[in-house]
Image (cartoon, rainbow over all chains, first blue to last red):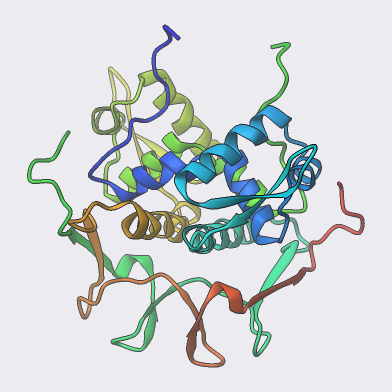
Length: 158
Length: 158
């Protein structure tokens, strides 16, 4: 394009940067939100999101390539496809729940959250948080330390 | 600009869409990651991220306006500023941890995760997950139901 790259580069030493290569786009997250709600077909997604068709097409193709969605033809002549979350895709749910809970807490109007998530069995509101199985207690982000993992590169690339 | 809008619109009925208005940008998430690591100064962030200065400036300004970062001058002539996470900003940590754990699990090479997060007190690896305090058990995303919350609009806007 001749233009300077304004997207962040992939970063082999950071799982957050790697994850953002796949889900670091607003439309992509909204498509995934709809997939979790059970929307599967191109036209359903297009209508719900009011997304330009070419953009939807592009994002779905990338999600299929990444392994997050699977594509299946459900009609011929004309060919129509539906998209379902793979196991890799379903495991994105904590990211969406974390975004939702932060939005609920900080960006809701005075009436409160637009949607509640509850634990099926007992109806208790879901609170995605840090819970230590060893200590059997909830803890806060300030109680977390990071250390190099086995996949850390020998030399920091930057 | 005369060009069609290609970003998703804000959506008053969805906390995920609202949250994405503030943190739905890859550079923004990487800036926040660095803020959690303790980087505070413009030049530190710029060097670590190799981000164009104008882009960094723009993203920091938006994060300050949104209330996620606070800005404080630490030097005069020339004026230099540092940026710290506010309480609203610190509560973004589950989003970053969720992105990291998904990246660790699905995008790490054979050597494993580049970085580990552990519970300070006992050294157990952090596993951000769904835990029900009422049932005293961990549960999976398939055990979650959503229902309208108090802030749901009377009419769906779309």
